[in-house]
Amino acid sequence: MPKILVLCAANPATNPRPQRVIELLKLKYQVYAMGIQASPIENVKVFSYPAFKKRNFVEESALYKNVFFKKWQELIYTPNRLEIVKILNTYCFDIIICHDLVLLPIVLAYKKNAKVLFDAREFYPAQNSTNLRWKLLFAPFNDYLCRQYLPLCDAIITVSKGLQERYKKDYGVNCELFYSLPKYHSLSPSLIDPKHIKIIYHGAANPNRKIENMIKIIDDLQDRFCLDLMLINTDDDYLKYLKKILKKRQLRGKKIAIIPPVNFEDIIPFSATYDLGLYALSPTTFNLKHALPNKFFEYIQARLGLLITPNIEMIPFIKTFKNGIITKDFKPKNIAATINNLQTSDIKYYKQNSHKAAKTLHMQNNQKKLDSILKQLLH
Image (cartoon, rainbow, N blue to C red; front, side, top):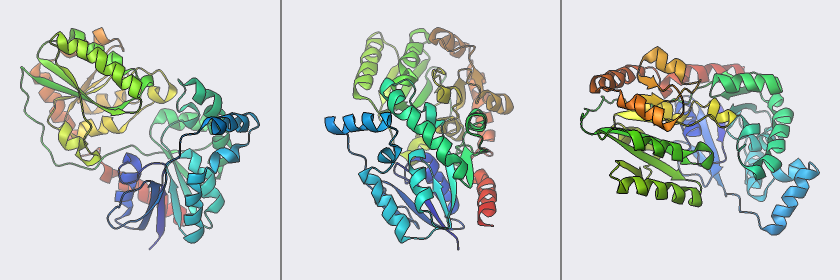
């Protein structure tokens, strides 16, 4: 039985793409997983390596110096990642699936005879392009990694057509589309209370996502709608700011709340108690413009009607499955107007169509594509 290692710079038991790939692989392969502070996974040999420690002043100064002189190996082989080298030296794998660009040089250097499948789940040279420090330090680093190492991969997958085209244009590499589809959930659309229509958004509270614009939607929403934001804290100051502006609206009687995150495996069942799933992030970066995120497909598995702004990767799905509505632009006032025009019968129709779409857009339907890629690599 072929041995496959899934490697990521996160916990592979809970990070969506690695976790779902592992679930598909377990059916046919001997699976190993490695990630940061990795949790146990049933029927998988799991290895762990520590998180990177925040740099002190001396280390931060050295980082700028290494970037200036293009000493990229210093950025790759950080002390915590040396644990990966130990595992790759100890074990022999048939295929290594790498989920993070910065780990790719290590994989390619120590893979032995393994084939390498890379998951380009975002366009890495523009990963955090709204942050000046990141643009100075890591944009050139990620560009170097892409130019140097992507052509050495045996296969590459990515999440959307826009990313697929950009990787081909900038780096001359072909990527297979591999959507971030969640596990199938046997659910039925929840009943709608016309006087209490529940909208949910879930995701990271990153400043570049401008969550404050989503909060502003509530200002013009009719009283029959309520909006819950399930936010993962990635920036203490930003989350504090969001809570402050949200509190002002609550004091005015607006039905909006920030709710605590649930466990990864509970996101879909929890979301299924809502009526509408919201995605209203402005395309302020290349990656946001071409996003086709986990939450989009999780909303569908939760049998929600979809409320999306005109994000180009999502529009074809809405038009195909007729399971939601697309706003005319990204302005909070206009998004609210679009929502206010919805009748209960519209929402029921969208939820029923998500119910149908959920039978197609699920993780198990990625099995055939993954098997095909791996078969080519093994032969």
